[in-house]
Image 1: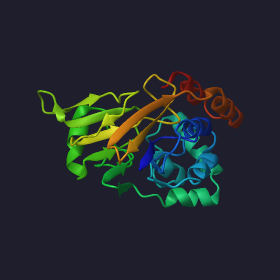
Image 2: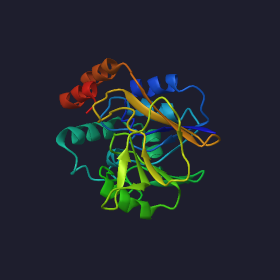
Image 3: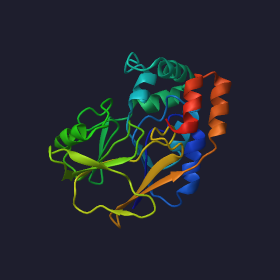
Image 4: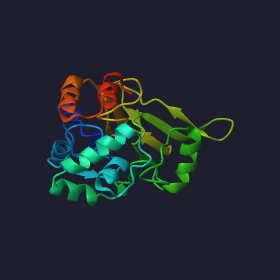
Length: 244
């Protein structure tokens, strides 16, 4: 089976469409949350996802748009976008987000948005946080999103302090999964934050036991224009162009 692993679409339909056009054959989408927030097309992105066989978990922006999570810890631009999103959501899409689980076990893999320890909110940004989180899932591999930064933390790759070292996701060649325990973040579809504005996704091939990572360009100006039309904050519009 070929699974399209993606996260943090953030209502960026142009980026989502570019991935779907690039990916070729896949059997199912595994979405790691934050379908909405920041971007200008929340309904369209949810509806596009629902056209395909898929599973999806809730992210912090999904919950904030539903008012299930306070946006008080968001920066002012993110708060503005969150409240705008809440006003835009159609009832059926509101209900869809409201019914998303926070953790899934699928085909022997763990799926969360933030971390297995705190699925909605914790950011796995640092090796010490990743190392602590291995105790909170039982599968070999846990897929996470939330940070918008592609990375692999391998439990067996430890430094002198006993923390697992971050590794870059390789582009161009499939990564054999082997038997090592890993936390894998495929990066963000709609708002990358690693200095590369291209949309990010991964393909998990369970028959071959490989993971393949991809970055592709998309027409950022289309998303930026739609954001301008909707009056979304200018800093959210500008950051798409430089991947931060």
